[in-house]
Image 1 (tube, rainbow over the protein chains, first blue to last red):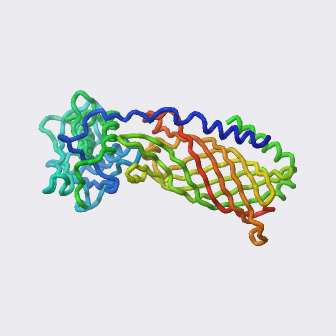
Image 2: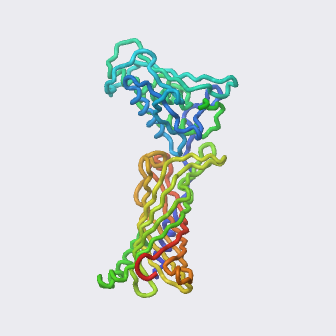
Image 3: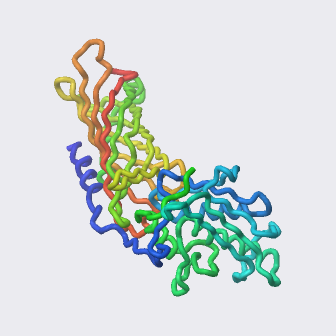
Length: 209
Length: 206
């Protein structure tokens, strides 16, 4: 008598599982750069980001790291802020002027800033020679400080996407990785693509530490 | 849940057949320490298939037992285990995700058998407590999962080891987190856990 409830419970718990196949993880846009693939391997995590200590850069980079980390389920990527640029894997700095540190404008996105990420290859051409460098700059024009802050915030997310190995997404796919990022954060297209990227065998090795 | 509810009701009914004074005098308290294996929490395929597993974990249990009509005992048990949880790729890559503690509270019925054996069966609720909201736990760990459990313990027939018993416990529950549901998983996965430990009776008759 007393054994039957336990057995019934075990059967109920065991039922209805693993019936469906795993979900679809098809990437939303190409993740290779002319056939080459780069991402940080597990043994290089967490990726160490040094952020310019002036203005709001540190807060922008910290937010971007968190946003990208949250795209993954299975420990594919982790990042952290580094205090010392000489120990960093990625260095993110202002190109010229430091914009005012104000709350970002919540209104429609304005292209008030630009960014670029530079990778330096070693002699073999199959490995990075040193840390990745990301630069953020203010574009000429008339913007409010809040519009500039919003642009910087989303552009830092976009550039950190490059530092993780993502190329630009085509304009036909809405993503933070579009040439002109208009989203405040990675969307599902970015999530699916970066998730897939981090399960592909890379052809480019990370820089030595 | 219904079966678990019935077991709880049965245990409670049997337990309340005793007066509080009798019950307090006869309560046994035992603790066990051991190691727990947990089967895969998630199996997925992105480029290649892989699974997510909790590492072998130290497991500790404290149980309070109330003797019922011989040879039965009702027990309330608190079980804790803690370990890292990682993704395991086919090429041997292990990617840590976070640290995980599982806390389970269960009601069991134990029956003493001959030759020092005791069998237990019970039900309860299990809660995953990840150390960070990240990865499969980025949106939390979900609610309390009902589990069913069976166990066998053996007391060696040695006078000095009268309070010790070697115990194997098996339980199963279903696992799914909000983040996995968001990813497209529609069904929970059955997780099997096996613990091997040593039980020591701290108070009352072993």
